[in-house]
Image (cartoon, rainbow, N blue to C red; front, side, top):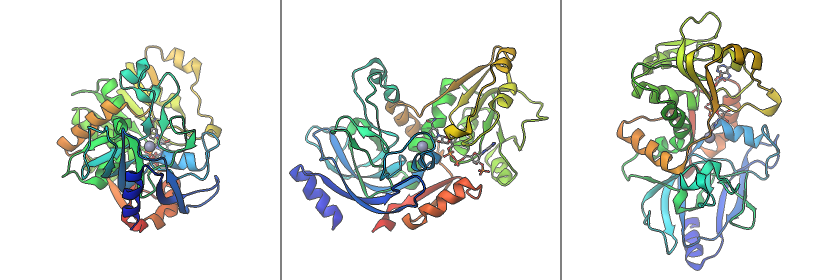
Length: 362
Ligand code: NDP
Ligand code: ZN
């Protein structure tokens, strides 16, 4: 019934009604939430969401761990679904196609960064994030993410997904996939590279898989041995639970750690000229700091931050992942299990990626 309503609304150019799961303040638990999205514009598509991954960024945002969040908040930026309506000027999709949406839904399209398809760095500050953001293209209304039944998005920001792709596996690629693929490409990880992955959760396991695919030898750093078996079975050389006493040195390290930790310990583990890509973004109050003295004395090693990836590269990542069957490790849950999933992800009981089956919303 709801889908029929949405199709009618799309046709009439009305706002699109939606339902999802939201928190209304930083200490809240998720509860059902009804809202509406902007009308379908001529360049927009309406997607019926089938699966949404739970990224640790959703937890940081829902709990206002980076900055004060915009509430009510419907997180979710790992979205896979079916195109059910298209605007009059849409050319990339037709009704019935499958589509993915990651962390962004719009940007200016005209600045240098946007022209290079690095939309996440839109120089006019107009990159609209999928949730917890004010949409400057739609009267500054708040954006709502993928823990919901539908989304309206500019076609440029939707990723083409082939009909036969496993949609529950595609969803997490839209953030966990691109966020790890992008720096691995940027740092030119290749056959023979010695790589370490710090933090072995939703992002970490993707980093392991991509680095292995590039031909690298990969070690994993985790807090305990809980997932050692999985790491070794997937092809890791070793799983370390401490940086101390590790003798090998790495060409490339990617840190996906979402909590307080000693970054400098990973700088020390780089070879001369080696690169440390930071993607994990701990809460501001964890005050993770780089020690400049140690950095200067570690001279010749490079440390950089990396933020998701542009739309062009996201499509490239998805095509690459599907071609080589590089998929996330997932556990499908229902909307009622979101609160439990959050608890598990923050208490070390989670394995890799929870993916919400949106059919459970009905
Ligand atoms: P997960 O919770 O799935 O995984 C994090 C992993 O890190 C867990 O396995 C956790 O272990 C492990 N960990 C925690 N502390 C340490 C530590 N001190 N040493 C080693 N391992 C540790 O999170 P995600 O993979 O979804 O996200 C990771 C981070 O990346 C988050 O901060 C998220 O916000 C950020 N992110 C950044 C993006 C970007 O564009 N830069 C995009 C997407 C996410 P345990 O199970 O024991 O808790
Ligand atoms: Zn994410």
